[in-house]
Image 1 (cartoon, rainbow, N blue to C red):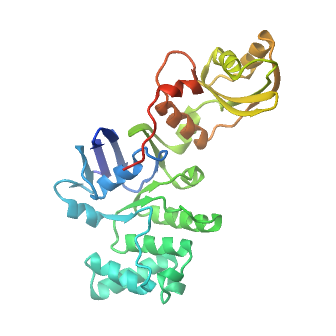
Image 2 (image 1 turned 90 degrees about the vertical axis):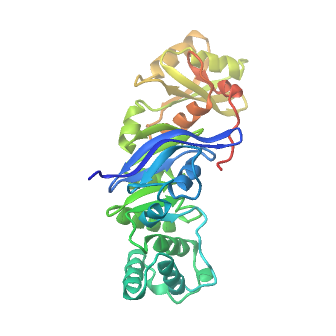
Image 3 (image 1 turned 120 degrees about the vertical axis):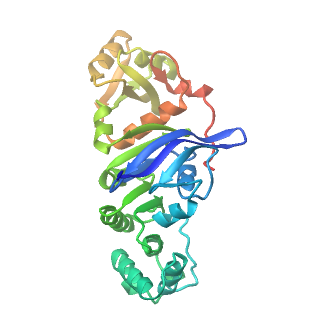
Amino acid sequence: MSDVMIEARDLTKIYGEYRAIDKVSFEVRKGEVLGFLGPNGAGKTTTMKILTCFIAPTDGTAKVNGCDVFEDSLGVRKAIGYLPESTPLYVEMMVLEYLEWAARMRGLRGEEANKAIKRVVEETALGDVLAKEIRELSKGYRQRVGLAQALVHLPPILILDEPMSGLDPNQAIEIRDLITTIGKERTVILSTHNLAEVQVSCDRVLIIAKGKIVADDTPQALTDRGGKGRVVVSFVKNGKSEAELREILGRVSGTDLVRPIDSLAGEISFEVVPSGTTDLRPSIFRAAVENNVTLIGLRQESQNLENIFRDLTTSADTSKKSGPKSESAKSGSSSESKDA
């Protein structure tokens, strides 16, 4: 029996002339916690809505726990627990009342429902608030209630859309630890903007930008693939314009992207992203000397998932051109649309 729990093939969703996602393909295996990342409008929510049968794709296919999203949407819904970004709660209900309702909606009755509720209350540590109305709860506890309703029917797959959104650091840690524990027994897709949480919680990372998959690997492999970290360079302007200084950096061999990041009176700083694993600092220093530019700062940052994410999603937004890319290359690219 295959251990592939989610299989998407060439998923495409078109609204008018806008392609929210474009031929998205990936698999998620049993027991994996997949971090699903992308900037706003990249296509994450559209993809998750297709996988949960909220909307149908324009083209392509998807199977969840062996059930086709077109042919067996009920089978798909039985197999998943879904927590959308806006937690679906009836705030006038007490916590226990809401969980009883969620169990009934999932087809659980009598002793089976009681056992299921007891189990999720223990998993999500809701025992102290069962008699409270949901409106009285903190955001962290509301997220716990949302997770409990997603877990009540023992689904083999969890799809969580921004579960840490709006939480304070302590609440976020609690929910992260809960998701990590849950992920030991289930397949999880976790959509989030919190890249530090992804590095801690996820076995694999899928990055989408402009409706296309731009990376699919483990967090460690992605950072290793990034090679040397970006270099931050600071110059004294000495009468030279930003464009001239950027051009000097762009001519340095091994440079992939040059991006201005700060400009103060008489000073300017750039990020220089290498195309490979070469340390660019010696070459940048020589270029500054040869062009009679005063260099006042030159440091290499350690590579991390945040930098990789930024580079990949920036590259997807930048028009293709030969040679090193600069921030000005973005001027020909289309503006990012909101995710449908």
